[in-house]
Image (cartoon, helix red, strand yellow):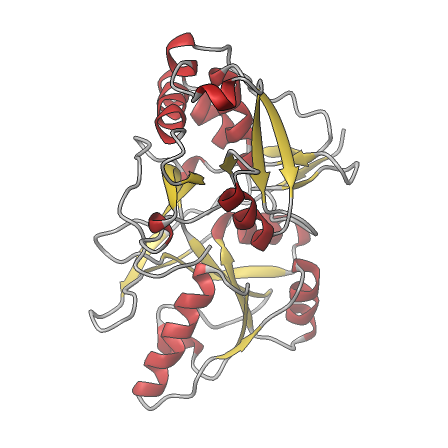
Length: 322
């Protein structure tokens, strides 16, 4: 069984942006711990699957219970985003923290998990149509999304700037990326933040951020390694994993993009008013109570992103995105 080491970020508060930032972010610097636990990326996952809890299972609408399965959409097509959701060494088994959380929830609901890997865009099309009962794919709660979907939070949403190893600059706010070539995923929360930062730079008489887009993570990292771009803004767990595994990049700044009084949150996502959200809430509460929640996050080295209490439709980011 092949294992890889991933990095655990030990972040210390460095600076807060002024109130004029849009949105206001808390920016941090990050360091890599050498004693990060090993992660199993083989097809033999031995996932944590709790036994059915009848009181929780009864919260599932009869229409879904009758199918005997929970159809789980994961938008990790292509290279995925380890350690959150990606394919194992057999190039077909979907693994990671997001599938693990959803599979554990299915167990408590007494349903057979049906993991379906798709693209980010098709994930939401599937949620809208009812093809997927739940989306488990590093989905950020936003106020705009709450108009169409119900959420139950299960992890903090922290982001990171990643640069080529040896970089001597850090990101502590919009001015630090002015005029820089920065890659970001299209249609994501990260993109919205970077666009807002670029606008703020221009308003302050600085060069705009030169925002770049690539179809895959591999293409992004090739561009980073060759010097075509200066940095990549993406999910903090993914950046930490890549830093440790590839050994060719470093994190030059991490932050929560929700502001000083609001932590960005990742949540299980389902079509609004389809009757499933309370079942997911009860299942996540049980996972926290039993300790299985902590075990799942720990096996993917994400304990530092744990939430204390899952919330139904918590305050979301005022911008839309991943």
